[in-house]
Image (cartoon, rainbow, N blue to C red; front, side, top):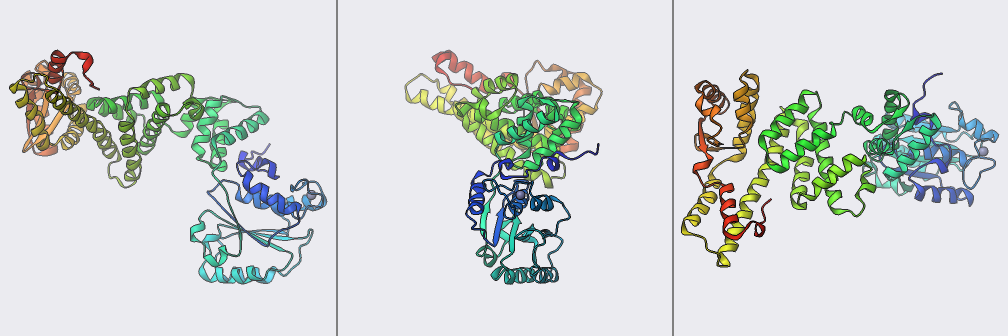
Length: 506
Ligand SMILES: [Zn+2]
């Protein structure tokens, strides 16, 4: 048996099977029932929403000898004739390849011939926005005085490119993006018919990938059917789509929201090693953050998300630990990076930078919260020693001069070099470092004194020093956490001062 793509095999042959466009179907079928057919229609909307299918159904319906409720019967001799691809009365013209004026002039002459089987001859011009200006003018003359037996259906994905003179002569219909649930219902009917089993979560993932286009969703479904051996599962769909393994996206997003720089870099490395495209990864992270926002803010998130139960629970519990403000800022950053990645010389570094920036915002927020807290305590007369006030300024002031973003970018490159060395102690030591910044001519790593493997072994220091110099031409210095007033110390002190339960620390 010859293989026929699902999209072609299940193309709707009457209006009842056209999904997601009820508003259009109602008007068109009413016109047919009341015999008020117009001579020029404009069907506009995203690709794969059913414009051409609707045009073909409409062409048969207005010619059908026994229409049923505005639908073509598909059985009478006219319908059967018009269902043949070779019929002379439904003429499909591709605007993209027949856009010249000569071809449209030729069309003007041909419209005078009478239809061969039915009442109307129907011209469907696809991608009509591709016509040249002179071709438009020629078309306009035909539209001004069309013969009684001719109906034009102009289809376009880009209605804003159409001249107003054409628009004003057509009855316009806007095809909507098809909703996820309509797509799921359609696909489950098709799969039942093909005797292929599936899970609803798997179909929801296919529908989401279609982004409102029936054609795109069914072409993904086609690949899933071929891949899955009679049973389509959620994981299969992710694999077909080249999506990143969910557990890896979870880990990466945890690192981002926890401000764990080493975690971010090692997880991106991990995912990149599996050969995933960075732009797909960026999209997956953006979708993950959006899903968390839905979990936090919608009444019945699972109804919207349609995720497998374990993944949903995981997502839901994580979402509760994050603030809307933080999630929105992150979503904004990852949506923007999708566009930047197209022009990036090294997409991976671009992506890592965004991860680190989002993580770093979080760090700034911690400082801001702490400052607010100290100000509050001072105002409300809680004893803060003069020494602590001095230290508070210390936290604040150098932060303006320390360049954390640049520090993280340099560190990302240094870590790449570290990974290529064969010193496990150096790798382990570096993976524990979570603070770094550029200060003047210095590249400063913030370490605790217990990370002695880095500082006590001269060879490790030499390697690291060289890598830092190669990447940045800066001096490598270490800041020992224990001796300075750090944020953790402040929190501990505040906890001691006013009690743990009075502190809001994320
Ligand atoms: Zn018929």
